[in-house]
Length: 154
Image (cartoon, rainbow, N blue to C red; front, side, top):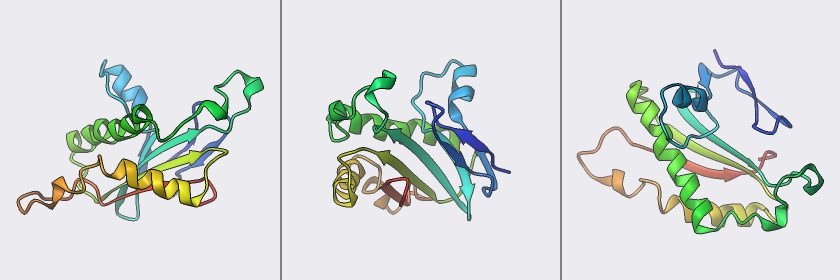
């Protein structure tokens, strides 16, 4: 059964109680001294494994967080980080033989973001995910079925 989780700044929660199971990878990777990047949550929902990454760049400057105007989700470094989180989290799925279609969801809260900018970002990041690689005839099952960049409202 899934759980309710707080995001890292403890401003918002994600309710995964309707999932068959859910977990935060970071404590597990930390326990075994694995220096892997990880998505915030993994769960199984409706027969799919969801990798969920949440980034809130709308936090107020007065709280001491990076100002939103300095956040650039299109930077090569930020894109590479989101891609790496997929691959390093996929390690868990393979290690525990979770054989289900995988969908990667990047929830991005950003003051300059709208549906069009999220779609452009989605296309940029997707180029580095294994969509083309998995088109090989001998590769089964699919590594990733879908990738989306969405806002909380979406």
